Length: 190
Image (cartoon, rainbow, N blue to C red; front, side, top):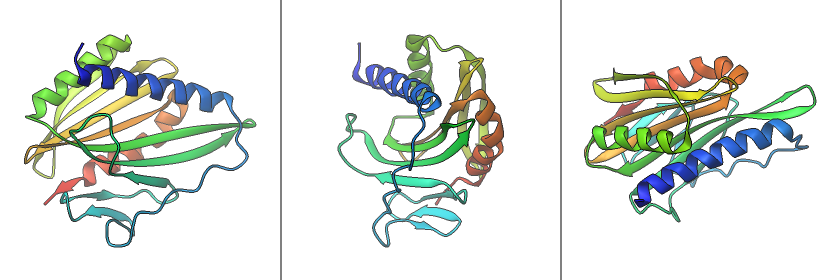
């Protein structure tokens, strides 16, 4: 089994487990986000990265974390994680959006990687489409089970894949789907 497939399976498994754990766990105080170093990333309603030349709208009230090293896949350049904690009925839930920037051959490679990961995890594909945002071609795939959803949107430009992942319990997925759509529709590569 190749490393990319194993990595995809591991990430999907972790996301499903984290989602399940969060739905059963009540945390007193979430950990504060780690702010990026000055000049690396701005968060005044819009995230922009000078080095990798991408940007997108940042949803207010969400925590974020930027990671640039120690990835199991040497092709990954940066990961930007956005999260929103929701308290309901005495429990703590989370909605997560993640952008992974990594080297890739083309968009088809990323699409194949998504499908292989879903096949190995047993998650059914609910919908898939090709998209175009700000003149950037992309691929959009939704998978999940009745109680939990995972949506992945990938764009490709200049040898890099920009992969957005959005996952949550079904109820919260629907609540923040428009937020995810706004992020995707605002995505731009310069």
